[in-house]
Image 1 (cartoon, one colour):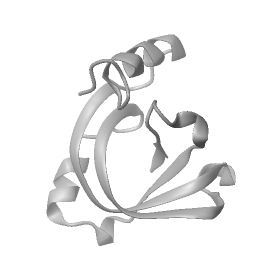
Image 2 (cartoon, rainbow, N blue to C red):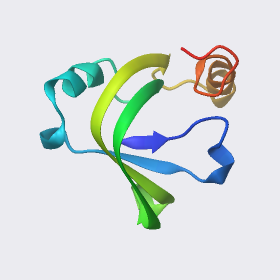
Image 3 (cartoon, helix red, strand yellow):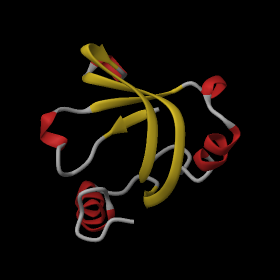
Image 4 (spheres, rainbow, N blue to C red):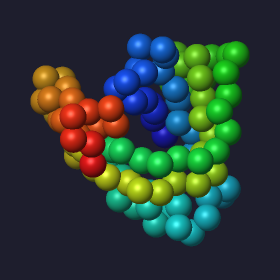
Length: 102
């Protein structure tokens, strides 16, 4: 799925977010329909299992993995790909740990 982080603790290491659609309930599936297709940044509440002690995700580049069993409260911060400066500005304002999170 992608990367999971909060601005307050991003320096502690990136976490790979793994979604297994067959394991999600209907409410989680409905919440995920709000996630931008292809690219974007969202605030989301996720319940599941946190895994450490390995290498996970794209190119095994993540020291942690979170396997989601429930997803809720999806709020779009950035839809689509933007230049990095624009993404950082939006994160600092609206992302988890930002000045005015959605």
